[in-house]
Length: 397
Image (cartoon, rainbow, N blue to C red; front, top):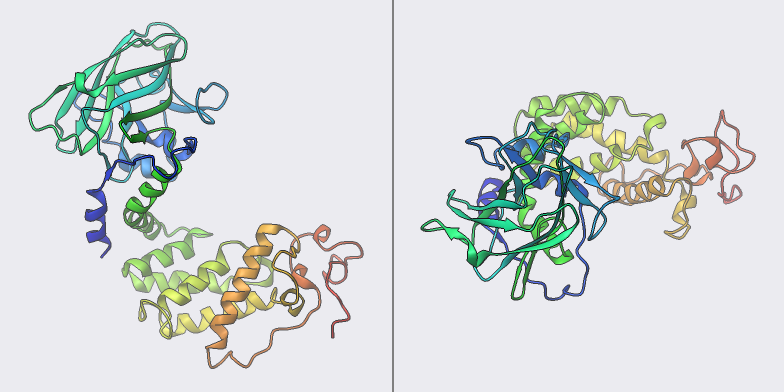
């Protein structure tokens, strides 16, 4: 199913019309923005390194974010050719995930650009490349040492026969640059008529449409990377989840999950990852209510339920249930994470025969029980027992 969805979504083009959000300012997304830019040597294309640029640990060698020197939004992209090995071409792609720009000859490439450090030519050879490798080429003129907003009408480009304007995957430049050159980009977009397709700074409706179109591909890429990573720590339960979701190597997946469940204790019950992820294991893979039953063994499922009970009993104090949702106890992110997990696990246990009649302990300490340092509990806390202090009503019975 995921593969078929990937094919469908990869064929979609990025062609967002600015309608309901036309008045909104374009927004930067620093993590995506820097990954869209790449370089290419002779005989290469700037999208050859996309798999590397999608990796969560990717660090760009030639491009950086500049939050101090920009024209639009919060930052600009600065290119240092010396750091990239003085490649032949540089530029940006339409997407990290396979989507393409839906352009037309009536549109223009518009961008803010400046070239510092000397040695940079004022005119760059510019290429648009479609999904089949056909090119539309021209020249971007007017580059200087100060910020300038430049426009390249696409109608002026020389176009290969059969060039597909509706499936353009990248834009690249060739320029005479020195090792001292530093090229800044900002506000890069294609525009014309009612279309405004951002590359660096994007309107909210465009970002939402791209996120929806690329979701299946991103899930597949992310789950494959997680499934292949069997290191310990936080990676182990994520790897187990990914393997079960992909329905592969289920023996290893169950083993990894069991190993992590056995490490659970009151000392780590407040971790932000584990309990929410264990709830997802239940609703995705349990044999009673899972969307994909049979991938988790009965033994693993039994231990999963025992672990969820123990982790939640450390936090699910009746005192919390009597307070407003916005009554925060301790760190707000741990507090809201715990409340969500308390609610979800309560729903799980009320339908499990071995748990539906159990009662949570009434410690009367509020959410502060077993959590953090003494400072979270208020005055009078006993740091050894973690009793006292806090905001719970100790006379609630």
